[in-house]
Amino acid sequence: PAPRAGGAAPPPLEGYSDAAAAWRDTFAKSALKSAPGFHKRGRENAPTARVGSTLDLPGGCYTLEFVLGKGQWAVVYQGRKAGENLSAVLNTGSLAAVKVTTQPSPWEFYAARELQRRLTPEAGPSVLAIPQAVNYADATMLLCDHSAHASLQVVVNAYRKGGKKMDEHLAIFYAVELLRAVEAVHEAGFLHGDLKPDNVLVRDDAPEEATFSYEPASGFFAKGVTLIDLGLSIDLSLYPEGAHLSGAGGSTEMIECAAMKDGSSWREHGDLVGIAATIHSLLHGEYLQVIESTDAAGNKADMPKAPIRRYWQVALWEDFFRTLLNPGPDASSAAAALRVRLQGYFEAKPENKKKVSMALMKQDLLVNTFK
Image (cartoon, rainbow, N blue to C red; front, side, top):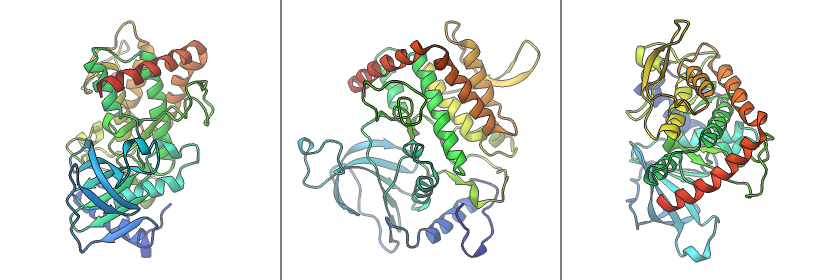
């Protein structure tokens, strides 16, 4: 756990209040005072960032080539070290993702650094590393590891443009991997806080001939997902043990859990709803809408408004959405048990692993065509 400087009081329990955000910023500045990679330029305004501009950043001057993504408070560019050309570099340090946030805050750099410190070596690639940060008076610039792989939102858009739907085996695969990644983040004492297709990158670090396996160093691990955008993350180690939080979500784009909406206390609940919403987008190509459903025994629960297709694995998806959209007191344990049950879908029929491998190759072609 990260120690609070000077025995300071814990942050407010209203997780995304202005007071809690200010507390996190103050704490991060103190915790990062002498941290490698953190550069304080609080008396300067940030240089203008736009496509075509060149920024003098730690590690070199980077030319911003194009926009990789936009959020409520940030723009992410692909940056290339000045003087390098496309034919001279292939997956080298010459490329970087440069994130420019218009609300200056060191928190995301702190969170990424802490997670890389706390995560196991096997789980480390599940969260995007941020080696450098520059904190200006009016903005923060983050120099992130570059990934040539698309976000799940880009994948969803490619299927839509191509007039296709994601193979169900592949959706189950991503459900397993997203549950695995978030489980690792929770075990490291963090909440991600903003899980959605835009904030999940497809990761493919394995050679095409790699066999699918549930051993950490092969197959499913190497072809998993990487979580990005920790701006709304919460370090639970800074709170009293077992503390639950309260209040609404941290942005208008956040997918809120029921507890955030009705004023109840929450903890991992928001992340679990984010997983459900992300996988729903893969299955249906549209955002999650939730309705109250009643089963044959008269039990009420939140479930997706969009129907589960009769030719899908109906029991599997009912279990998936019921577990994640209706988290109980021990939400993390329930999610871990759900991941194990989903893994059983592949373990019971080895041919399903081969179908995922083929679907991944087809998806790569589709994304390269329509992204």
